[in-house]
Length: 394
Image 1: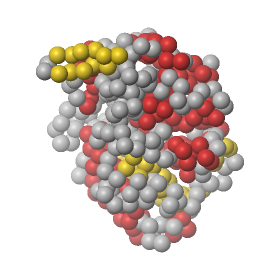
Image 2: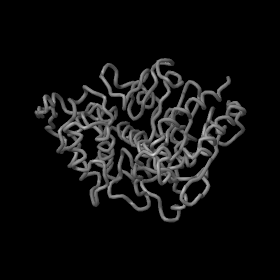
Image 3: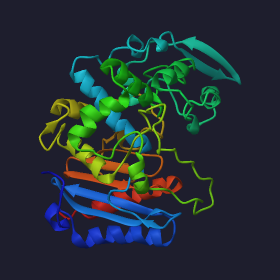
Image 4: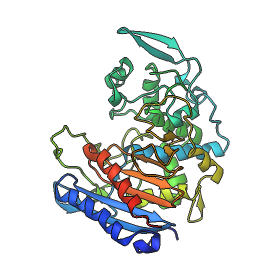
């Protein structure tokens, strides 16, 4: 069975450098900059490093455990992207199909053009496609990245706030009424596109998003703790952030995951454990297969982890130096250029509350770090990448 736990050296990791990775994170916990963490590094299909550090809940002092449950936020997106591509493999749609073919509320969209303080609405030059949703070129946005007229409408209509009774279908009807930020296919803009993709999965499968994921991805891969909410029996395993930011900044309010949500957000809604996510990442590293369970064909995974942005301009929130964007995650295009280490072909994504993962096929690595420290997430995401690559000595 893949992902069995072994000694660091048996998994191609340096024991001393693996210990240093843990020591660095522990020092940050001791400084009260980080409540706790779960780190998992697997190489050649074996877990050489799996450790829980610090506390799961600063309010109670309960220690972190390797099976603590974390809010994944945007690490939901790769899972939902895989769900969509599984439906594509079943002949349910073409990536070139307009989104409006299946979600008619997105027909006849308009683009907001701002000039000299005035907003003009113009028709789309072409409709957004399903490929545009997967690579974030559909003209959608996130309101936290700016203060344009469109982003103000997102805030006004609470596009990314939990609204009582608003499910995925109702969400898309509200979102479709807001003008686009840019013409489809002309700009890479990190956005609510995967929420729309989640609704597309529902329409094409005839199931709720949660039901589809559970039946076709989570249960087959043995991701037993991944879902859109945490049942009462497991509330004691939920990881929480500090009540106050250690550096005094305003703290992001964490979503309530203790009861079923009205909307099963394809972009931000899942919770899960480090081991669950490692099994998902190992499936991708295995080109669609993990422990004899195949979700996708090898060529489909290769296609998903190729760059789909190309020469399309993209904002920094989506594409970093030396990178492109595939169908659900960022992909590394150059060994250098980027300030973080990584092989060409490495792909990754992260979540707003602090979770992150990366897969390096060239080095046969799956790495997952789970924290709930939203304001410090970028620092630890980068530090983790540096420390993991330092563990490789062959």
